[in-house]
Image (cartoon, rainbow, N blue to C red; front, side, top):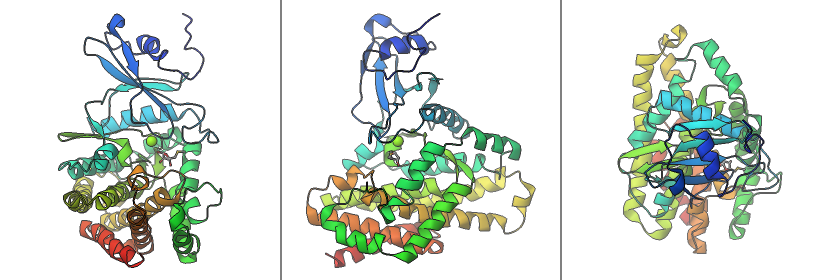
Length: 408
Ligand code: SR1
Ligand code: MG
């Protein structure tokens, strides 16, 4: 049967109800009471709609546009919607219940139907209100350990893993990360950095004119491009996390690919620091204390759970050799520090800034926030092997704050 959804076009809020009826057949929709809206929160790339009916059914439709929302010049393959859907479905196997349910995905319209999580908050929005979530460290460490360890050669059959590498090769999305995260913050080569003008000289000195830093970032870039360690999420910031007091769900996995595990862990650490920056500017002391505790706890729980799950689940005989686990985990911690550093830098000076920092209205407070990110990021990148415990990761933030204050 012919359908107007047999050829790609970018849908609007008027199209998505008919589309939902045609594709989300798993749900017994009450068609006469169906409505659709564009939710308030959205990411940099895609279009999202929430659809519901009067009988309690609802879902999100997410569609990839030809251009990204953040820049009409960027046109990553619309296949990113398939990548995201298939990765979420796999993540659901590795860490059940920690991602939204995917009802369907459609490689013609480059859209998927996803569980309505409007009873959650987007974590970045909650961080901007300085809300505290005591179970976040436990949840996110579980998600990272399960998805990263179980998709790696430590556990997965090597041929199956290589099939997944092939399936999730993602040249366009990797290209964005390789440029926006792992190059441009250090040279503005494509002249699209967003630099806060009062901080321009400081950034030039600390990021653009530091050859020792550039060498370490170059190594991190090549590691990202060549080390197919695990199926990582690839964009694990607080805008990719739905949160409530009793649950956490990770979404937006379109940047997922086989790459170093520490890329995800480092992203979580860095994005907690952006929340800290915002709390500091607002004088939200209890919130800032909770953020520092959460960085410490997330890292300690990650280390503890990874070590335990390694012993339970590892299948590769050579990974059971004495000393291997310790060597492997040191590598993850080095990468965590390194990629926490690059995320701190790129969100401060790169094309895709974070509202946690850009919404700080007071110039001196914003400068302080930005300089904390620059100093903490450099510490993480330049001393990767010094970060071995949660306390080490958290202490870098207070150390960077002290150093930043001295510059102002
Ligand atoms: C062009 S996309 C810019 C950024 O938004 C996404 O969420 C990723 O973090 C990407 O780097
Ligand atoms: Mg995103």
